[in-house]
Length: 448
Image (tube, rainbow, N blue to C red):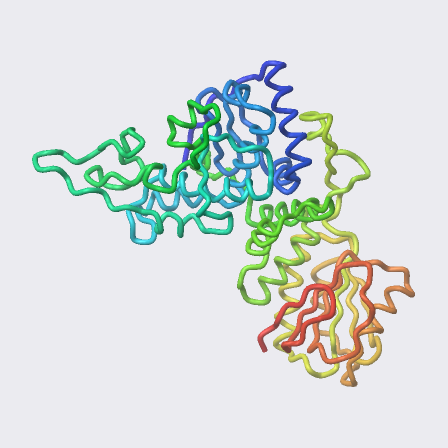
């Protein structure tokens, strides 16, 4: 991990305006990326980096380099760097560098960055976000859905054997530049360079001299910064990261600009193949995360940074009302109830809702409780409740409507065999002990 940050510089009025125009254009063309940027990242102008870069938290850019490019190209650079952060490329790079290997092959930072750039650029070109410079890495045979590791292995070329009597190390690669050994590969085995991976598509427009000097790249992956005193790595926590991804996706979807490739990426981040309890935590955190926002007043910090872009501020509670419905028709075991309440208790502790409504229902609503503390949740869990009849999912939704309650999310634990209501105007998560999938909302399979 890096313990020293590049020196920050102050933008000239012209540079600040140029970058501001790029941010505004990026909001229109790639709202998913820019929303994540404003939530979890920090812009860091510096002359210590030739072009641009990212460490997972900071977006580094050389203002003199950006000045040389059109606003559309700056949009491409900006979203490209944010894409690196969303894909956790700096963290993955640091991990591979420590191991010295990637899928059994020698690891090289430069080549890893090349493969990552090819994938990101392919997807941004497909999404029509900004404008790629003709000299930046691009190849028609690589698409945005590929994994960096797959591309790394696919196009890896073993180093040539050392010449008799020659040292063999740090030989110039096909780009004409010394490949070096900074990526962890032994000096006697120079890793592939950009020229050995699929290169820049042949075009005849004006060249980007700095990108050409980097083998078609225009950025640097920087290892995440860690405080030299505390050792703490400055990155979003897993919960903050997933919450920011969920909110960025929701914002882009509301604007009708969530491309299929990004939607698949979001699903991979928010809904990996995990056990049902982790899945529930992921869904609820994404929907009601503990850093709830409100559009009733602007985010003062972001308003100061950029008065043109209005972003929501944080509200006092992570959520207002959460409804938990328990099917007590007899099909849910005590073990499942215990696990369910334990997980919900942990989620609610993280989210800090203003109130929690617990509803027990078989064919009718048997009991309701309103709780505000975890101790009350535990009391609800152990107190006997009448039930054991048939299953009907409609009564809890009717009860909420009759009592003028609109929860931010309703979680329903059930075997899914019963009558479903019409879809309400709030999110629903079905925790199913069977293979039946709910007609609306999210369905999570609970392994009994």
